[in-house]
Length: 599
Image (cartoon, rainbow, N blue to C red; front, side):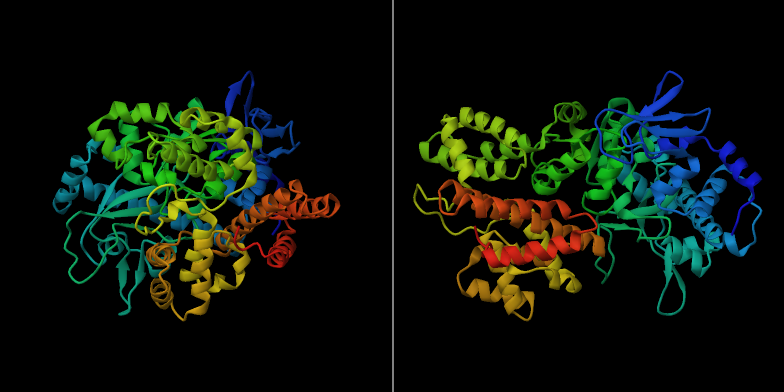
């Protein structure tokens, strides 16, 4: 439908382009202009400029330009009319169009209004309802008093089937469209949250779009087994993989400091705010992913992971390094005491929490530190084993210069010669020789295995439609390969575990037992494709290192090797582009032909 020129002009005039773009990019005043990092290409030096008076933006790097309507179209992939409608809703401008044309816009506004009303209702219940007293007492015991509860608009969902639905008179369409409830088997409306503390999730503009709910400790649910946390499902107004809890409150400090602190849970974020670190956010029931990094790099260049110490070490190293390079950000880790999370540490020692964030170290340095601090450095054998473990971690990083800098640090720490470590690093992984008395067989935890392989195994077990995307050649770790082979040969994961255990393969049986009970994060086709891409990258790079080693040893001719290396690297670059399908097929065939399943 065509829009009147006067309506379009009125929408442009009524839109604050600086406020609009600031929801997606950190802008700072520079003379009469506002500048920041371009949201349309990766850069470290701001080249994106906004002219508030003219309502225009321009990037001196990629030459992207336009007005508020153009920006909304590019960022949200909307057509012109839908972009104008969204800005009209935002600015309170009435468009002259027929009712049917604005149906989708009206529905979105209806869902947002219902969610806002639900947040207000839950919040009032927490502050004033007698049945919310245990929730108030629990929050107080966690260091969350009335001021923090009001700041984060926390709420309480009563232990009732449909209290919210009845109070707000929500019809079935709105109830299910927002994720606030559903229609049960008896045809009755039922609230999604029941007997839970409510954590409202807001978009960067401050509009409530979803809820997180925590059950009270010790709650007797009868025969039901209830998860500790429950989150809203994906809805027309909420996308988990793009949303960061508390970004709307953290934006100001993030922009001022150039740093964003990422936590695992909602209470961790609130604890950091209470400790004075008001630039904290959290993912909403999903693992940290590509879309989260894309959002964060628009606001800050330094990302600090403030997870439980062991959890931070289990982050997807290959993905983190790729995101660092792709989005030109620096990822660091706050060194929390083992067994502590930010919420617990904030209560016990808020100064220590602030220091941990302020003194966060690079991601690779953190992983190496965890390896070396658990090693026995008092003996030659202990230092040798520590060196082998450190080299495994170093090989994950894609930059040769970065690897070499850390080689020197590891050599100094272990009292070894740097040239010897460099040679071992270039040779690739090998089977470690036992230098002491054999230890009893021990199941390897997934943290010591390549993350892409672990994610692939989880998908194989939990997402049946993803299985045809994986082949044995993708699994370069021997244990993960044995797990994959066992899964392919067995009818069920339980049968595969039994077969592995019966054959004496405790490592593989233990890993599969853990995978079976692990939760899969995002199950969308995009998430599956991302795991496949990471798995192929990891397997291909491992195979390329072997090929380069063969070339150095004279086992293959330079002409043949160089042509293969060039072609394979070219296809690696195609992953994540429009040629991803062709690249995946070519790399799969090459890995199978090469027999690169086990290094």
